[in-house]
Length: 303
Ligand SMILES: C[S@@+](CC[C@H](N)C(=O)[O-])C[C@H]1O[C@@H](n2cnc3c(N)ncnc32)[C@H](O)[C@@H]1O
Image 1: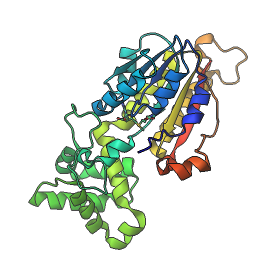
Image 2 (image 1 turned 45 degrees about the vertical axis):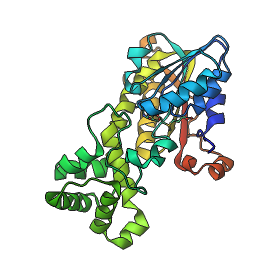
Image 3 (image 1 turned 90 degrees about the vertical axis):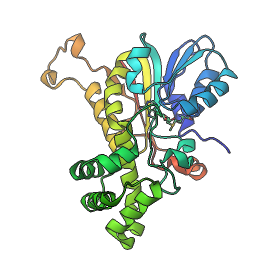
């Protein structure tokens, strides 16, 4: 099967790759972006992160066919400053999950295939989707379904889950889908697909996705050399809002210095926005790869 990397050309063009530069792929996956970066370097170096060990083996092999100038860390990208201690020329984040992760029913990410309620990106982690669904309080479930799923029937769905689990633990993905359907009724279910939103919410909670993103972006900005760039591809509005807000904050003069003729060096904006509005996939890419449908690419440069 052909492996598609979302907005590959746009990312590679915008990273301005230098032959002797140092780059970071924060979300290695199946190494589509990393391979293109490595191909464009001679004496440079690539650092890559993935929380999922299963992707790393495949990617290490693919990358070593191009060059040996890379190192892969099995770690969450929020730990980047622990591993990357010198400045770099570019960082790519292609957020969320890879198609192989979604396609593998055993990982529990898919609401279309039956599998265990797992959803862990990092299999060494303790918290699973089953813990969330079976142990979180009613109010905790309502909160994450509203916040991370933006599902208006969150309370109804959470109540149904709590009712069902009083009889027996909820163990499989399709069992959860059925519970969601019975909570909202077939008509609403078929029209609005709340299972997508609830699965998204649980996945974000299990993997602490939004916290990791909020934590890493300011650190990534600080890791950039002058002229270095960050490209971030997001797949839903919660992620995109975080990226937009953090990039806006660091690209503007601090409120207290606005309108002043002289701004001290330490208070100058750290970055400039390369695109005010996010770049979207071309219509050709949308045709070839449906996964790119909701993708948005934001790019900044360190000044
Ligand atoms: C969309 S895929 C990346 C695909 C890759 N760019 C390619 O072209 O093949 C996202 C990958 O990032 C990993 N990932 C997501 N969030 C992460 C995090 N906070 N830390 C480390 N890896 C993460 C996932 O395990 C997944 O393999």
